[in-house]
Image (tube, rainbow, N blue to C red; front, side):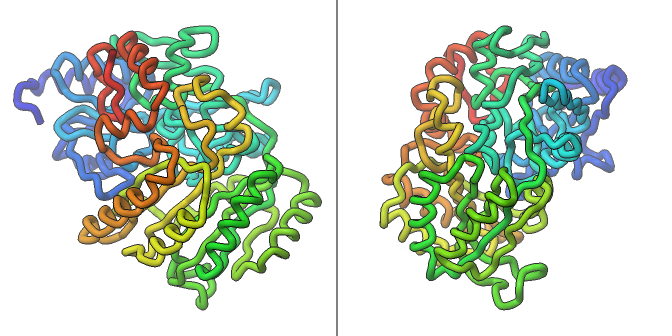
Length: 461
């Protein structure tokens, strides 16, 4: 705790808010400060678990009065740990979980503390969904502000492509609406620019008819990986946008429900999602199986939320993570061979490579239409060294960095903001490329003193 903050001031803050104020020494402090990535261990001076917008405003004002660095937390999934800050103040939005589904207009109003699982629970009974990610424990706030890609990206675009309006608390403590009609420059910037411009307390999204999908994982032996990945690269070029699937190089988890003969084996996998009729999906998947029979085939009809949460147990909160993101358009023989070799050399069974195709609806939007720049890339790539053991920190970090350096000459030169660690200005320049200059100007307008700096930080012009 900063010694220059009187106890009376802290007590006054606690009394002024509807939510909770947590500080070092409180029984719930360690749980409140813990993040999804256990490699990040920060000790904030104060955590304000906000109940509403006025709590957010009070916390911002307190941080400025006492010169506390400010971090904003939604679901706590950010790999770089930007949801917390040492010796500063954390604005924790996780208690803000209101959701309103408008079936007439097919929109969903979501507060920023919601997880994807909570949103799916609200929208699924109405046969609706918003395009989000692939793990249901992820928070909507950070995912949406960074872009948001997942199972519905090819059909309906990124999460930001379905954002209609946002309510934002600005650095001066005032509130603003951001949409095409109000503060359009702010609306442009928050669609991919992360938390650089204010604290979004709620989002209004366009929803789409999604109910029972045909999907799930198919696994093949690693010795088939080069052929399967080459086939997938060609297949996804012309596949209908209702069909998506991310490609993974991974190790089969060593336990149920996976078959014993596959547990612990390195494999390649495609996790499919087809949002079309079961009859059409069956025909498509029969043709996929005819190309090469999977060693494991768990595809079939299922509720969309079941797919969204299918892999949550395999990568729970509390693991060590070091990840890097990139974009690629061309999977030549070297890229494919390098990928297979690197997964053979992976230091832990949890370490992985994912390729998310972004060549459908998302690619039809111009690169300067939102802050997300890499609209013409074919895949977003994440390389993640993962372990349950803190002593593996150095080896998973070294493996990830080495793999990323091998891939970089064949990449499009960028990186998805939600798949990056805290690596400084060079990373930010790669993420935003031709959109960075405009982002810097908007940052200067809405946050000239860079109050919101615990992020992939865009410097004010």
